[in-house]
Amino acid sequence: MLVDSHCHLDFPDFKDELGDVIRRAELAGVGHMVTICTHICKFDQIKAIAESYDNIFCSVGTHPHNADQELDFTAEDIAKLADHPKCVAIGEAGLDYFYDNAPRQAQAQGLRTHIKAARMTQLPLVIHSRDADEDMISILSDEMEQGTYPALLHCFSSGRELAMRAVDMGLYVSLSGILTFKRSQDIRDIVADVPMDRLLVETDAPYLAPMPYRGKRNEPAYVAHTAEMLAEVKGVSIDEIANITTDNFFRLFSKAKR
Image 1 (cartoon, one colour):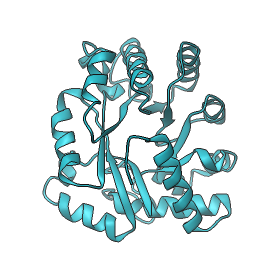
Image 2 (spheres, one colour):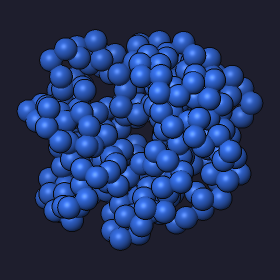
Image 3 (cartoon, rainbow, N blue to C red):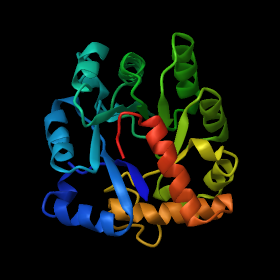
Image 4 (cartoon, one colour):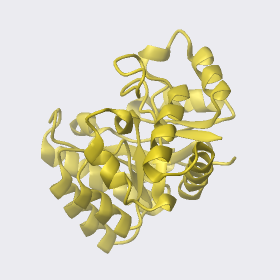
């Protein structure tokens, strides 16, 4: 069994065929999916999807692109919403300096609020980090000194230092379809050195479809292609990668039930 630890099933891309998308995932061996929140104000829509399917969980949080729109939400507010039985994570939150859709100060403030919520609930924080390695390391390290919290770097496409510092802090690393791209050898080289017990797989659907579907709409079924590449990078069988990444998922997302 595989787990798609990060997808966006509430996005309009899936509106007219969500049931078919989920069935295709199940046929591809994807036993569970986490549909990730990008706007706290839309949490009701996201949790409704999780409530409708036994094998779908959700998170609650604000994407860094939207950070300046939801700074009024406190860590206590987020933790209260996370009490929902199908909510298994906080986020996604983080820093995105590639697009800079929100002021960097707002992104940092939002990230620290979400870290506090993860610390309060002990639910894993789903971290979005793009072109912000130095500041991300600084914030994660500073916050870890104030009290530990579970977290993972989602859709990893950053540098070696961030990956290794994250692992040293007890965080996990999740791989998306980017791992399969021809120009991603640097990422494959980094992942080769990440301990097996810290790795997860995801789609980030509808984005970042893996080879051979690159350029098309992504969906949870395609996480199998990322898992195949991860198996190749690690020199193990796809069955072993499926077992390891699934065990890692349930260890980190401890509120989720098999």
